[in-house]
Amino acid sequence: MAARILQGFPSSIGLLFGGVFPLALAAVVAVVGLLIWQCQLTAEQSGHVGVWWAIGTGVSVLTGFALVLFEASSGVVAVDSTVIVAGNGATGGLGGLIVGWYDARRLAVASERERERLADEREKLALVNRIVRHDVGNDLQVIAGTADILERHVDPDGQDALERLQRTTSEAMDLTERLRTFVSAMEDDGADLRPVAVRQVVRTQVENFRERHPGVTVLLESVPDVAVRADELLASVVHNLLSNAVAHNDGDDPRVVVTVEADTETVSIRVADDGPGVPQAERETLFERGELGPDSDGSGIGLYIVDMLVDRYGGSITVEDSDIGGAAFEIELPRVESTATTAAASASQETVELLS
Image 1: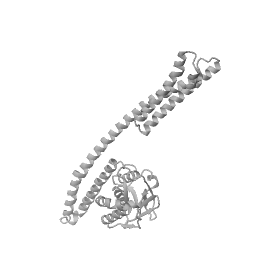
Image 2: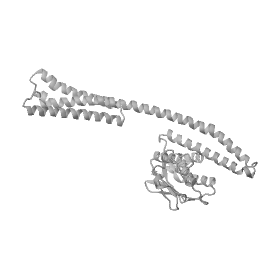
Image 3: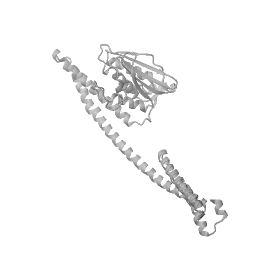
């Protein structure tokens, strides 16, 4: 176009509309592009602007070529082909930038509304969490303490009812703790993830599980000294897998085998049991929120929390048949440098023990 201007136009009007005007449009496109770039749009918003610019420019250039071909086929050259193509392209590009900018603003407004909605939901969840953990939790502690005192005063005829009361209270207290874990996972965006010592978490949870379930045989094989990128809620993941391993096992001597293996990139934690197992048809929906098995009387959020936390840690979870006759749940997490394990272990020890 610059060369065409230097060659000259037959009239000043031709110079204005055939040369200066298309160049001015191209300059405006460049200036608008720089202004949009300085707005520091997100990658998604920038992508929308770029797409609309490409669409506007592409369609207009094709229209210009169509006009040029029409002139050539009719034998009449009213306007230089360079002027048509360049002018159309610049005009279409400018229009595309304007449309793209408004599209980016629409995305920004929608994103802000979504953030406000999520913040409101998290605030409500936090409120529910405080009510359940403090008000309901304190009442459950009183009920549990009173039930323990009544053990010395209940005759054999009322022993079954007392044990049922103690068991139900314990399950309700466990549910409030799961709710705390769920809300914590919803509130946390993953920014606080750090190296966590797997050996420490697994051993602590297995020891606590043995104390709570003396009738269950728990075998813990050698645990390598490795670390994964997680937080204190990794203890809740292991706790939920152990609890799930005996939740539906009615055997006289339930067995659970915990195995931890590591390679250069990943760490896997496997919890296998000798219970009834998980039917193949239920495995695809097992980790969905509120999903219950046919014989389950639980809340249906334990495995959902596990799946959500493992996903936040950048890992995966699978279920298959175990070697001892039941089901085996295995989580695989990215491994981090073990040099950070020692420092992270001392920092997270207190929190892990509190969770247990």
